[in-house]
Length: 453
Image (tube, rainbow, N blue to C red; front, side, top):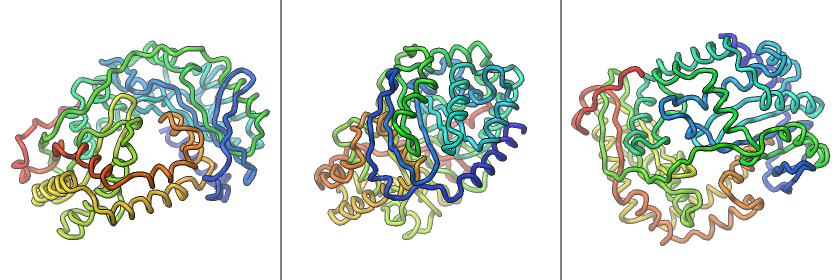
């Protein structure tokens, strides 16, 4: 409602203001500095005056995994409220200040991190960083805003109860992670979100927003000395240490497992996956390349060829490696007609088994390497994308020169390593969740449809 209208207006304003101000692809090769402010705030920084724009991405350790067990969705509510007014600025006034200067400020809650994003024109940097400072140090959490945001979240959760993709994802995570925090939806449930009160919101913020877990990446038209001062002014007053609850290490449950959820929808959704691989595993890059070969979202992937082109069972099919601090996961998705669900699941399962047993060919490996090396350069063609990548590399504990080294890491993967990675991830088969009409019930024992929660 009001929030959506404001965000839409801000999106329009910033689209116009930043039109044509995207960075050149050469930014991927820009010099990355490790900047430490006078007050000790550290950031990875690329100074670039190509356009008068500054983009900053930052993150605090914690995320949705720090939600109380009976109040999942707390981190998401906090993220949705952090820019709803601060200090003596109520929500309306705060957003008017952002819109007037075409400043983009947002927060999001991931499983392990509480992330934020700030983007502004160079001339408005002082106001932008000051508004960020206020949102971090003095968010208002007014009752009227809490209830408005809560109602928006609940509205989305109600829609999810009839969305086959959402149902499949939730069921898959339950099968994979049981009662571990990773099994819970970051958005919460229809039962948990109403129970979250202002004390929960303030407590989460006070535990998470602290300097010891803070990671920052900045790209844009600002010099190091000025940026150091801005970082101290913005983050220097935050608490020194976060108070985080320990999250145990977990390996996703062992395949094969199958579940079917009855839902009267036009298309049947299939979510499939298996235990994955953590980012710090020495064989991560081999697994990353093999995932691309299997179903990395391109038209040349094995799943695309076998399931769509060869048999015409689906429109699209893809899979991804997902890495978290305490686990790793492989997840794939597709959708098909109800009467083709069984054939689709069987074809996906057979192709995954074939790759696990035989591994990729040398030609497939070489082509995947070529694609992944070239696509990285295209993925870093703006200051915001580069800042996002630099933040992710920090969270992944990669060296500051990782962009320069990445192609060599890709090239170093051998065929034997790729085959070993395929066997490790898919050797036991798949966890499969099917959501749709009854004809595909033979895929697995029927699971009672989830209640609205």
